[in-house]
Length: 420
Image (cartoon, rainbow, N blue to C red; front, side, top):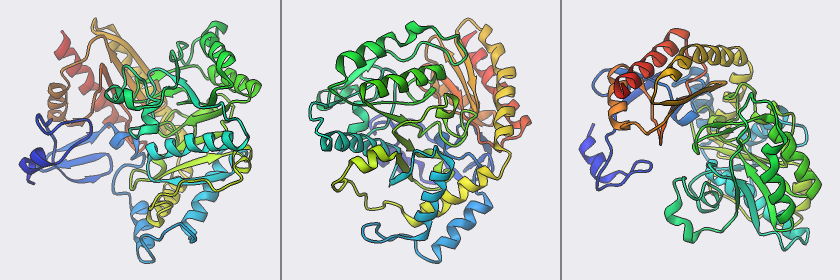
């Protein structure tokens, strides 16, 4: 494997080519393992950025793609339809709230956020709400790397501050301070309520990640916040968008994170685990208020919209999940991580340890030397990718207890050695 060529010519996420970061050469992947070019293997504790919930090289998902490949790999969705898109659309409508009955297929999570924002904006414009030109969102949020998505990511601590002068200016409030299991206090909602009351005539929609803020800081917050937000959005006639790209398909212990609160958004974005990590695909679902409120053509149409291969494997991945004992598995993962990660809270350099569903987070008081951290964990057979001051894991749902224990031991040992 020509790693030298890679380092000189291939851009990797959030890197530059003047000082390329080290990369691992992966020859193949199977189950929870990545097999490296040197013959060793590592457990992928990241599920390839949270996508591969069933692990790698799954025979059922392989077969779904193989079967579809013999028929057609792609056909334009403009003026044409096909069975994989129809069946996947049906399944998404079946497994989400009954109010979400319209589906737009997009290329990726970032594009799904763009679509959701445009959908909400076009709805407002067609209702004559022309003064609505802003979105309201949380600090510490992350919604993707395209321009619309960047504009609702954290403007200061996020990854996109270099482009701030090019982005539309939206309304940001502090991220929720109420922990997932904290007792509710009304003051938690004060800033949101004040901003919505003062600016609802300017606000197209509220957009945020329900219950878990992912790449913006792995912040877990109370489902009660969602309930109160839904009530206020209804009071002021403001649309509500949930970005469930990272939280959807079981990751938080519920099939979708909004289920923790028992409320439903007007628009919802799905991605990542939608295809079990096999192909890039996302979906935007909305209710009839939005879909019927857009009476002219909705002006978005990606070339690879509803790609048949992606739709076929997406349908197979959802069915594989629903037919499994995923809830029990996620509960077992959560319990084991709570048991084995919580003791590291005692270390002086650790600020907080938190677990929800199949998400485990170790928040450090200061960032670790992450390249050195990765070098040490890989040497012990574990692949993780810390960011900022966070070391976190999102293992595949198929992981066995002994493999998860190996991950937690490696993290505990490595953090201890590097901070003590």
